[in-house]
Length: 383
Image (cartoon, rainbow, N blue to C red; front, side, top):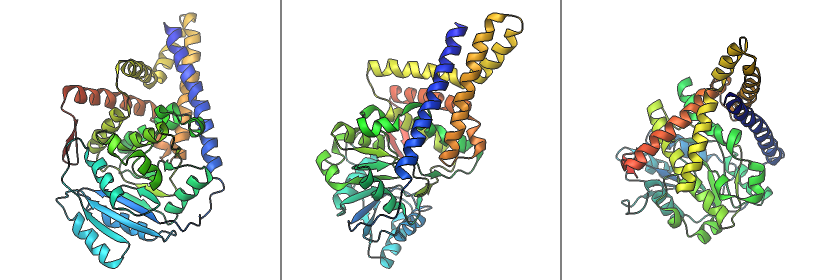
């Protein structure tokens, strides 16, 4: 049993090392020759905003200064109870490219953000639509960068991780759960070619898609009840033959997703549950993955325990070597991945804790889903 456990840790460590190395080389290749992309296409920037008075002005102003000038900036006020709408109206007076849209009351069968995105899609006129969150801040090259990657990689949708801004180390460790994808789960080089729906990833902070692709999908109607809107759209694109891409976006924008640990926990557990496919087979597979992740989170401690026991019993020597090698490979890779995506070296050292948080958020989210209580987000219950 000890040898089996340590072998699993070693195999995952080796997998993580080669997966991230492959992903990093792929990311470097597609972004290496990035240059300002000249395009005459109209781009619709679509921002769903619900009670975003603290963020919306800075977000819109960052988009006003894009090098790609042919754009319209649409902000949908999703039934806000704060000053979101009035702030956008002031900006609209200063720039004709900005337009405030008053959101409709949420219709049955829709989740709030997807209903907002559908309205923005219907109101926009651009050949490309960039959906972005109100808590993002874009560099002047943000839109050009996305257009370049879509053109150079012949894609129809692109998303990627921005530079994440956090107010504490604890919150940064929590947010770094997103590293699970490039460090442990998704082979992005293969995914770009094979377009497996299971490995299709996206994040709503930056989601650029060709309008003609979205039209052929039927807008957001096919996924209107999904919890995780961004991943659902990426999977739908892959399923329907529209090439979706994922790329590093740290140089294009930054985002402060959460201001408190509690807020981050509630949002991320909702996303984790939303990504997980349903059904008995899917549940059993996820259960196996959860058990392995739980093992990995305690792998460094197990290595020490096996090492101590090996002094009195030689049968623990091989488990000690395997678990130690696997732990070093896995968490050195995790730290490299964290640094690459703009997280601090400090947070990168907390890989075992971050993986444990993934497990705990999944289990708590599963309880909320199965109990029917759902997830409370932006004042709405999502079931």
